[in-house]
Length: 274
Image 1 (cartoon, helix red, strand yellow):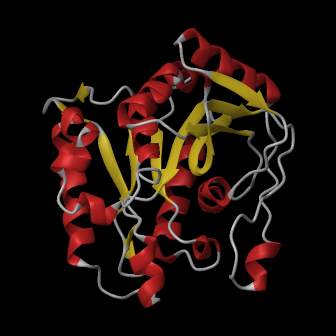
Image 2 (tube, rainbow, N blue to C red; image 1 turned 120 degrees about the horizontal axis):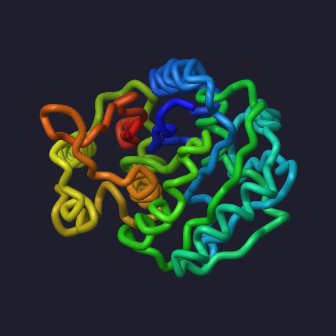
């Protein structure tokens, strides 16, 4: 087998991404083709903010239904399906690793697949052939807690498991719905400032700054009135063992798949890590 699977953080943006993906969708599709060229992909483990639970529960449904967990969108959006199977054996392996790390967990055999999972996977892996297991975001978790969840699962990467944190680099829905901007309107300055700050912290390997982003990042409270859509970034960083210096320059290996902004307020940054 080749080296361990990379880890992704993807911004899934609006539910409309599934129908109007913009450059972000095309970029994820190109990256997914590169991933498949490796030839070692076995399964996917995803954390989405659209499944929040008391503990880091794991989905063990053998064939999770596609859940259209939103309202007020065009009818064609509700007809989309992502029929990838689940993997109860992988779900147990995930839960065992979390338990071994002292992280409260459990299995949920009824959980459907929310749009934070299937919307970006429609572009990354449109074939829907590979099993997908979801890990719940604990409702009381902060950045360091979520980083630890990802770190507990890092060894799965060497068995062909793609680890994905699916969230949104900025997520101010009050402003988004207040103006109903078009997908290609120019980005708000606060969105650009927050995105640039996160990108710089990733480039220099400043985990301490990222964990303390609400105090240190520009316009953090405006970019994220609540934490949940940024927390999957920390799941991805933990799973990647980031920061880990690689190469002659001694910099962490983080590649921007896309840094598009949609609808003025939604930074669609997606990163491949490791």
